[in-house]
Image (cartoon, rainbow, N blue to C red; front, side, top):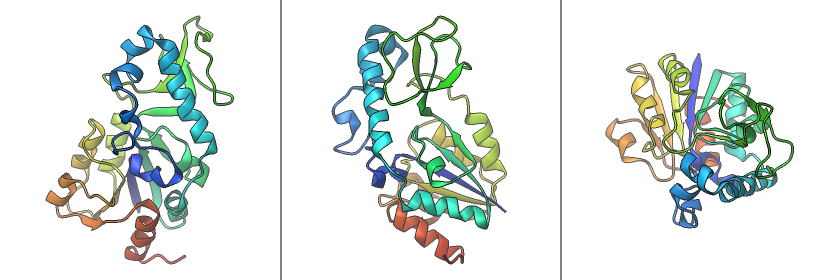
Amino acid sequence: MKLVVLTGAGMSAESGIKTFRDSDGLWENYRIEDVCTQEALERNPELVIGFYNQRRKELYNARPNAGHVGLAKLEQYFDVQIITQNIDDLHERAGSKHVLHLHGELKKVRSSINPELITDLKGWELKPGTRCEDGSMLRPHVVFFGEAVPNIEPATELVRQADILVIIGTSLAVYPAASLLHYAPEHIPVFVIDPHIPAEARRHGFCLIEKGASEGVAELKKMLNIGE
């Protein structure tokens, strides 16, 4: 049975990864236009690369929370496929084997002219001006605002195949990721885990678990009749 999980920033909040939209989130200190667009990278590469260096440094100090671990353990019972909007690697570090990143991966960098030329970054710091093997400047392997989301099609296909859909810690307000909900087969069970349930989820009559990721995944396992 295929259990497809869509996770957003709330999934990693308990691990100390700041979300962008909370009152004390990252966007309180930075404008999207200054750190998360191609224009910003061209205008001020030091600021943009420095911003992601800090995110990467924080990630190296973070640990998967019980929610991440709980999802990994579900692989004992289901074909678990995780689609994440997060650029951290906490799902992988918790043991999840099938993780599709919609918005890129923080620990990777890529060519500025060839999106397919991707490499792992050793350590947390990318030096501004570091060159790729094709001669272009290396940039964070993240999807900037206004850029296409290359993995949206494979994500859509995964949702179409779902027998159970679980949505954790996402506002369902960021497109195209939010559109994935509409590709789920009719009548399959859909669980939404979030201490602040999105209005979109309430409208559909889904099974709502109004808790954070760790407690919510534990509750999900009970509802699926799975013990420890």
